[in-house]
Each structure stands twice: as C-alpha cells, then as structure tokens.
Image (cartoon, rainbow, N blue to C red):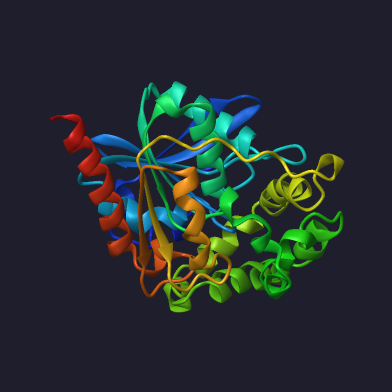
Length: 309
C-alpha cells in the first residue's frame, strides 16, 4: 500500500483535507499523485528540491475551477525510485502513462524548474495530449552556454556535486546533514525565504524518506553529462518549435535563471505569452501563491473560452 502523507503535510493548510492521494502504475513502478478540485484537468509538475507538496497553496486556489493533479516525479515524494540516472524523456513517459491510467485525453500542463524540462519533453513527444503549456522559470534550449558562464558556476555547483558517487553518502550521513543541505537551497534561492518558515520541516522530512536523496540526484546524473560533455564533442541539435499556446511567468529575482534568458523563447515557443513575475525568486508558487494561481487560471480559462467559441 502507498504510504500516506504525514500529519505534518496534511495539517499545514485548512484546506489540506480536501486533497486526495492515490497512486497510478507506470512502467517499472508507481507514481503518487495528489488531486483536488473539479473542471478541466491541470497537471502541475514540481522541480528540485521539491515534491507535490510545494504546489499545495496553488492547488487549493485553483481547485474552484480546475481538476488539479500533482504527481511526485519518480525519485521523489512517495513515487517509485529510479534505478540509476533518469532522464526528462523517461519522466515524460511516466506522465503520459499517468494520463492514460487516469483516462485523460488532453490536459493543461504547468511546470517549474526540473518539471519544465519534463514538460518540454512531453510537448515534443505528445503535443496532442496538451491544451497548453505554462512555465515558471525553467531551463530551455535558447539559454545555451550562458547557463555555464563562469559568473554563474557558484549558483550551480550542486549539479556537478550530485553526479559524484559520494554525494548521497555525504548528504545522508546524518539526518541533520539532510536538513542543512535542502534547507540551504530552499532558503537561498527564494527571494522571500520566509515563505518556507512554517513548512521547512515538511520538505526536510520528504528527503529523509528512503531513496529520495538518491532519487533526486539521479535526474542530474542523467541531465548533466549531455550538457557538459556532449557525445563526439557536438551539442545536441536544437529541438523544433513547440506549436502550443505557451505562457511563461519568469521570476524577477531568480538566482538560477536570469530574466535576460527569455530573449530566445519566441524561437522555441512561437505562441508565447511572456511576462515578468515581479518580486519573487526561484519559488514563485510558494513566494506568492495567490498571484501564481491567478496567472495559471487566467491563461487556461482563456484557452478554454477560446475553444468553446
């Protein structure tokens, strides 16, 4: 039986009891999903170091108008753990299997950070399954080598560390190490670090669960080598444009993703609605959940309205 979310998770918001929890089968394992609301289905994909709970405030705000479905990506939360490196394409296959299991032919897709990479893989492989794409800050092909500029390396050192064989042992050698490691990222990357004050232990508890540290690291073990050491010394060809309605709300103060990097987005997302999300850092959905939910709802309700004309 799937382990149920702890009391710490269930008790952080008065509406938490409305969220149901279940699991669906995917190739080689299961995905835990949290679900609330009714209406047109929206899938929300989290980043790292996160799990479904990071979306909880936004889920409850969206539930009035949407059927909100939030999986734990494989390796995190209460989903199965990958055996070794796990790519964005493999995560996208998991999400597609989830849609099939839930009987959902077409959904809106919201993503952030690592979830943005999964969303792009899904949009490239199965565009007919998506009504539209919504991104907060994410890594896209148009960023190119700027991501690895010397003045940026201090922000992404963890990506290299997490590929090493010792990384999991170092982080999990003491339960307090886990707390220090993951609290650092949640606080350091947020423009409003106080947004995690009352939930930091919930996030730490997630990474104390067996396999979740290694499970998260396995994404970077798959993602980083092609970026830093591409086969034959040649970067992978750029993907074709995604011809889906796309909304991007890019954080003003994200330490990982500079707003200047939105300059090439129209090349890869021709049907683009781009605006800066003011006064937030890397976690806009927790730093200003009400505005985040407004942006999401506004975009997908307008798509639905256009589709019914």
